[in-house]
Image (cartoon, rainbow, N blue to C red; front, side):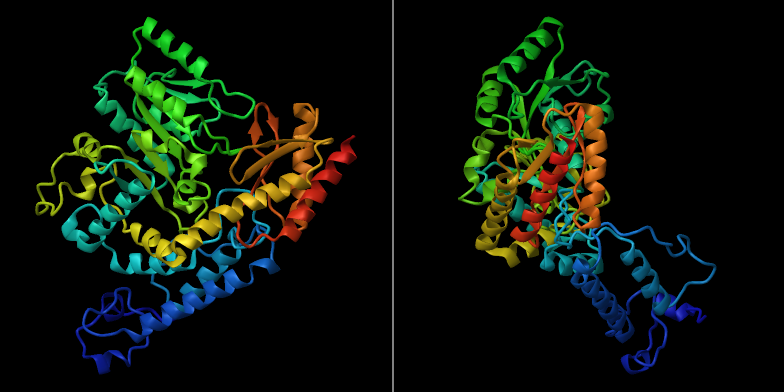
Length: 482
């Protein structure tokens, strides 16, 4: 095995012509000349990735378990060929979101421009902590957050910050709400959410040091929407027990059925009560970008903060989450610490003073380039076609044998009509395996005490023919239980 030399690991001060005769890939790119070995390495890695993506339908979305390459560094570094082979092994054992039958989760195929942007992001290695470490990208993040805020019809004072996933966006929003409500040091404070709200809110309460009952779940109606009357009862109880409320969280797209809480009514309720309204729109907020679907997100413009995750439907390569706030100053007031080791920011604050994260990669690059590739027409098409696929599946399901649980978005769940929890457990496990044998991957979450088959129709490769096959299988499996 060829062992990389010291000059190979750390680059060289040789001239360009001399560098072109090198035979080993350097661990660090030359700063003086084009590195042909790095270019060849990246081209080969890209070729393998393109082959993996392009052969998705020939394999199952969920691969069989495989032996993985060595997880730890060897005593001596390995060369380019070994590195590529190691990558190939990992790719062959990876979940395949590009498969037309990948319908289990909110993980669509990657947008192709965002794949390229991920590479550039890694190569630039800029840091959104401070503007001098990412001058153009810090400005890009501000502009793109402002564009989203404007599309959501938030006021000119709005802004935001990118974050590593919706969980962090939600946590950042709730910490900001607590600060704005003057409750930084009150562990008795409470957050009100719906029964079907995301588990990340429970995590946020733990991180924030709230009491075990610092999260109060409000019942939902038959459509999965938070009940305002029950919310009022919860708030009245809190007042009677001198428990302050940090925020009410509305969910715009619940995880299992895609339900949307009554945001306009909740916004008015919070305004009347002087409460912060956070909208967890990780799943659904992107629908506000499309004129044909924006009505689904009515009331979003009244929120104090919004989590939006373009990675969940628009296919922006992970991670791509934004937290938008009605008043940009709220983020600065909450997280400003000063960065005495950095030059002053060109804008009001450095990126590292707008949220919990300090060092951050320039993930905004993926969102920017991906949206540029799609354009407004492409964004609209992705959103509208996802809804059409869900409607197509729902129309194909037999309601005489299946209980279908759905909302207005692109998610759907079902279980045998009248089946008890034990039968649902058995049925969903058998159905999931049967569908996997057909190269269709669905999930089986627990919702309201019973396992269900969940289908996410955000995959643009999924054809109506595949949906018809899925519906037929679900119907047949349900009839077999009768």
